[in-house]
Length: 494
Image (cartoon, rainbow, N blue to C red):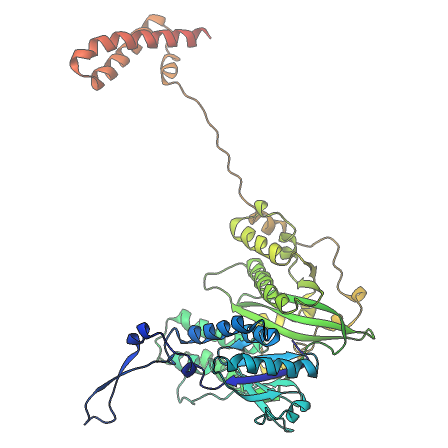
């Protein structure tokens, strides 16, 4: 996350990458200009849009250029390797000199592979003076769109629009999925809105409706309200830069929550400048629909914490050059209790997730936050645009703006249901081994010694006669009889 951002596109990226001659035979196409002409066979020599391998081949070419030019242009090579999403470049710098140097080195690196850059955009007016960036659009109302996000350069803010490609006369599972997929939210800034459509789709899936079958009236009404809300997305604007120009300290605060319908997490960045002034801004979020197989609410809360731990593992890599302090918040005291236990004391499902969370968040602190102060609560329930604007979702929980002494208390005894705790403890199995001697069990109820000897002799004789060939039976009967009598006599004496 840099103070000055810059974006650009590679012109005809796929067409600049040649495919090996031995692999071009897999890119034959048949073509004719009209039905009256003969079919002609063509061989495509460059990476072709639409093939499964195209994104990898093009991206691999960029990485090769970065490795080849890392000594000549280290700054640009590093950006080429990490700041590209297929043909879209998104990077930045904290000062204008570094920004120009970055742009120059990226251009030089890509020129080695004949990858020309165009459609430059930046939020710094000084970039307009660069002669090599004549296509730069930095007017008062200039906006650019990258990866589904609209970036207003002057205000340095993200805005959103919802324009379905087609308006359908009837509401079916197919039309709902088609319309819902047109709302692209790669950063997760609109997760409370997106989760509503995910819940509706899950309901349709559980009903096992055909793709073109009309949906029930209650779901149709819920979808209509969702669409009506999404039409007012243009009123939202989220600042792109989440730090401060003279940031002194950075804190990452992750919140998680769950309901019976969905669970999710969100991450806020709290910064302080040299004057001690603090700001808190939303950085990213993720949401998931609850599994179709019914789960208890405590387990869903644990799934939310597990999702937060993986999201944090990706976020902290972005701030690898900074010293950060991390806090993780949950309104489930049972989850906080589980996170203090060793995995061997927990059931397999709970123990595996607790182990992952403990490993991924080992450099942070888990704390309790009341439900009404948890911003992830709206994420687990879903909402419309008007509710989202009124909520502190884009700003922060109010207590984070204050001093840490005013944060919700972290200590104290947890108020949890011990029945639920015991139900998720690992079950202990014990095995009892009892040695049994069948001969002793038989003679135990016989009071006559002579009767016992006779009975055992007949038993051994019967067994040996069933197992041995006829010539050996008499000899073996004699041996087994003496062995059995000797062993039985010793047992009885002892």
